[in-house]
Length: 269
Image 1 (tube, helix red, strand yellow):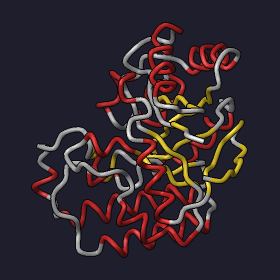
Image 2 (spheres, one colour):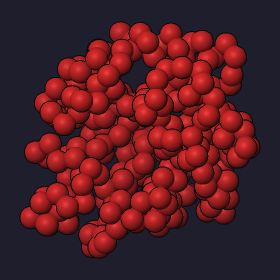
Image 3 (tube, one colour):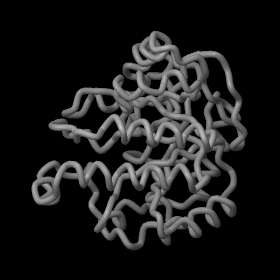
């Protein structure tokens, strides 16, 4: 069963005409179940989580009520899940927990790290001075520290694009396998699902998230998977998902997580 549980409508409005472009591409690529996962920073109700990151303010253009109404309409006609991609900030755990409890209409919540120490949005600009002023080991360790805290927070259902910090390519830190192994053990301990995200193939790193190297290290843990192309435009929906399934099976992964109102349903890969 091919799924794509990670896509964004944010470059258009909540109207069926825009949605159908995504849906039709999913059908072309044999995707059987899809999930929309708008970024949390898009919604005014979630603004308290992001108000310390000024760059996100212009991205806040909608309300959760609009999203809920539109997605409820789609669910009556299409096989679609309601998701959200929520950034993790260690000092915002209380706010995240309270807001997810208040707005509890999601089928699943993707947890992601896009900002590390000092508000460094590492995936925004490859020429950000922090990439040259900070040691690569420090950046990766900072990122994986946030990721480990995300897992332990028990706020999320799926860990999205787990090694996103590598997206610009270049040298990996020498201790990368240790970082991978440590976070994998926490994922098992807290019973989370890992997303295989194919959008890295469209980035300078030209590699899926998490890397085949990471996946080979953790394949014995029986961690369930979801898959996502992280499409922000219709043409990327389902892109490279079949290849990602093939890789996962070859590495020995056996299970997929499907979600309904944040209940996890395990099926065979």
